[in-house]
Image (cartoon, rainbow, N blue to C red):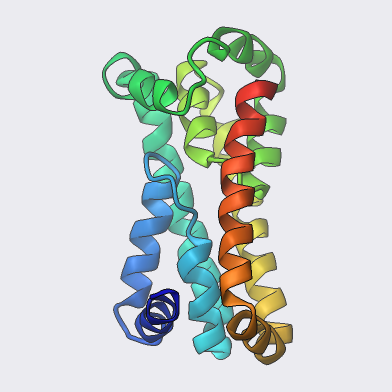
Length: 193
């Protein structure tokens, strides 16, 4: 089953409409969706290394646009949409202390977490809730998200074929590792924030 899913993703990554899927996932991940766009970015670059920079650009642009939507959720719709999302991730109790620190370190927080696999939607919504300066939010988002996706695409562009062989050889182990890191990240953040 895992091999079929991998083959499906690689097949999708090579199709013209893959950019639209990548844009949609990148947008949604920055505001409401829990899966990072890397699940499509990586196979897309591996399937077409010559398009690595265009793929990273699409991912970056839609991620920042999705981040603006997350900001609006926090600023305008927090009680209706944002609070349930924060509650879903288990951050409600610690959210007040987080917003206080956010007022002081907001730009750096956006820049740091924009580079990591941390659920970026939490940061975008928090930025809206705390009314972080929109220019600071946008600059930090553009720089961090672009750096993150262009770095991944650049590494795959440079070392593509050996990485593809490695992924295909160790697909099961890498999938387990991905989910352990994803769940571990959520748990660590629950206890750190």
